[in-house]
Image (cartoon, rainbow, N blue to C red; front, side):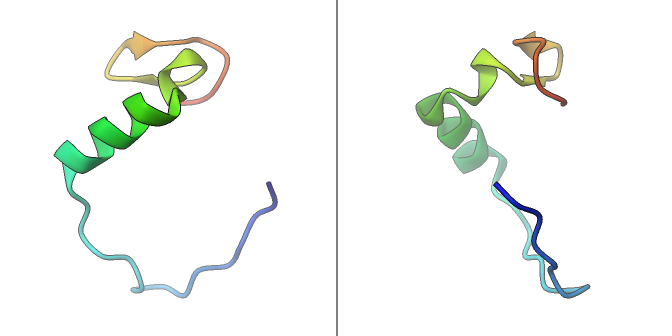
Length: 44
């Protein structure tokens, strides 16, 4: 992955329920942690 530049103010509000489901489906918590749950390899 490479960093991308995102214009300031172009973010929309997130949906925490969809975000939790997505992180579970994609296996993000195998490496990353959110709220103290998950792996220890990646950043929060």
